[in-house]
Amino acid sequence: ELSSGINAEYGVPDRLIFRDQHLRLALQPYLQLTQAVLAGDLGSFSAVLERYSAKFRGEGTMTLINRLRHNVIKTGIKSVALSYSRISLADVAEKLQLDSPEDAEYIIAKAIKDGVIEASINHEKGFMETIDSVDIYRSEEPLKAYHARIRFCLDIHNHSIKAMRFPPKSYNDSLEDAQKQREREQQDLEYAKEIAEEEDDGLL
Image (cartoon, rainbow, N blue to C red; front, side, top):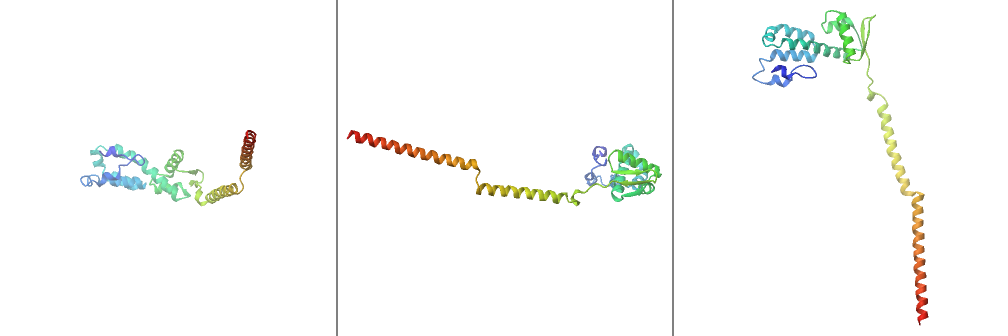
């Protein structure tokens, strides 16, 4: 059923539904509704709703479709906020085909509260101004981070080279201790040989 294919993000059916050859003609009005919702075009949405109202009522989908009006307006507000850094409430009402600037003001305020857009409303002068999001990739931050990583890698490389050229003191000390131990072992061996030779001479 159409109502089972509601898209969680936009509140419209998945477009794959409309590709079924057996249902394409019957679902044509719903395809037009879907396109209007995704475009945020309240005028087109209202026109389709008016044109096929009898069909929608007969199929018991009118209540569900009426709920989509909110999604159309929300998508339209997003589009306006992305397109204009500042726009009058009257122009917003005209673009979204709302009844008045007051309606636009209410809808914008709700969209801001719900986190749909980042903007502010100048109630005295009657306009909406969007809050620019900082695009970090247009700043110098990526370059600084890149240089920091290169410097870190070079430091590791330099420390590794130094470690190979100049072993740490503890390493040298361990080498000296091993050398002394080998000398003592050699001395002990020579001393043992001398004692053995002396004993052999005594027996003779």
